[in-house]
Length: 470
Figure 1 (tube, helix red, strand yellow):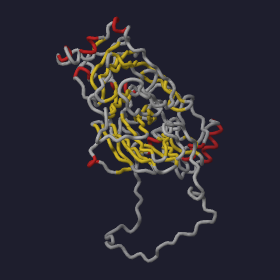
Figure 2 (cartoon, helix red, strand yellow):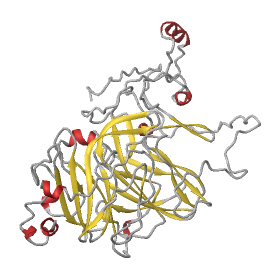
Figure 3 (cartoon, helix red, strand yellow):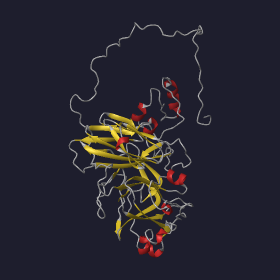
Figure 4 (cartoon, rainbow, N blue to C red):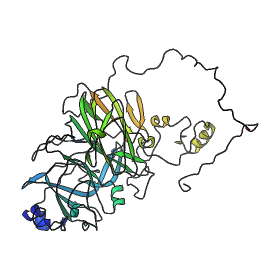
């Protein structure tokens, strides 16, 4: 253990060429025991049992990886392996991840910590780990073939470096990346400041989660790894609404949310009822002069955004990606628009042959969220989730920030639905609405059209089907 612990400070100064090294059988006996977690619930924050103190984060529908101290080094053990992830109640996916889950557990350290991470490969192919955004020796960067040999199945490698700067980072493979990341291999890394920091405020609640996406056909369980854009499951920490836990806070708490994006597109993250500041990126905390209040911030591919707000408005506040297709589950991309088409007679005839047949979208898509339409086994319904007033008609990247006066400090339990004080909730008008007043005094156009055809002409537009003609 002595040589491995010191090879970065002494002999390890030989350009870091040994970098991530395969662990010998003798050293394997001294490995920290791997800790696994399979429950999809949000686990309580891990109060640091050893090492320097810090204010721990809460991983939405996830957990923090325990460690051991060994000669002043913080040691972790990650196991890359196939996992089964419950993405929503009644819907499970066969993914690849770490330590029993996808995404893997969050790693928390303190600025200045010397960190040693053992990585055991239980996948059917080789892998590696890239520590996204970290400052470290080149040989620890985790790019297969460039900075290290691959970690073959059944082998364990060790990475060792100093957590040089505070911030929020990610980890993921840099080996057969298209397959392994499409299968769910990723995780969060948080480096806490070692003391008071002029740009990193102390907060009461600190949440983290990753944005990820999958293409899993209805009735199946394994993602299609060749998909580039047309994903049908947009998720936070490999969970889709209504399977995503709410973010439960006390009124007037200062709340931080760290969001990492490892999907194939950007996500405008929108919070209802509050304004927030973007206080950090992958590069570290943002300068005070570069901060302004927003209610939506875009998180691009491979980026992290850290937002902070004062939770001073009680209620159940929606928090979601503002791309409408990203708040739906199990979407089909070739469904024609049937709004306004009366095809009741056709439906009756088809139902004689297919008893469970249902028409989609005659009056819009809202009905689909409430219909108990038969779907294949192990399929996430498109728009689900029941609120106190009925169907929420959302799926995918959607959750709720629950702000309560009575939520105790450190209590992350779900307080249930908000009870609106009398007179503070929108309601149906008892009397019929008056007819709208229409203006009759509008003047003529400022620039009258000239040489127009005598009859109206209707333009017929034929749209291409699919993406082949783009």
